[in-house]
Length: 231
Image (tube, rainbow, N blue to C red; front, side, top):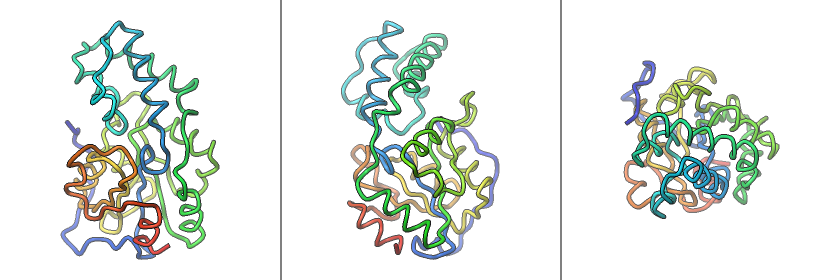
């Protein structure tokens, strides 16, 4: 369940236009900018093996990219100490090798280049650890495009999507009335909705059946996203 973020203003005014020059674009990372599933899944399986947990159901593995990993571990029935040990094992493998089992989706680097060149304000809002998110974007030469890269805190006190979005809005800074979320999971849609922010759901990510419900727009390709954003 999402924790309650620090209060930020919401609006009942007309929603932000994704193509408007003053609209701040908040991008998710996993399943939106990069295809990181292999590294996440391998690190997840490694973590469970390290604590002697059962091999996860394939459907569980399908849905791990997006929500906070600690929430997933608790949902599997791991007790507090075991979940913490599994989380440590996950982070160790992911930091050492999993984050490199990753690729930028075709066309995304060029889209970010063009948005940046046009003077658009773009930021990242990801449930991935903030330091790791920046390292990934540095690795792919993309971090300079973003006004701020917001992610989960090291102590996991800021890990749910609404908390991360609140952090991004404060640090850009940005008014929720002039922001649009771009992501691939229901967590993006729900987290943004806490602030009255509409979401563009990208269809190339890791959404499960029904997760597009509640999204204001759904795009099937990077070209479709480019058109929606006026780039």
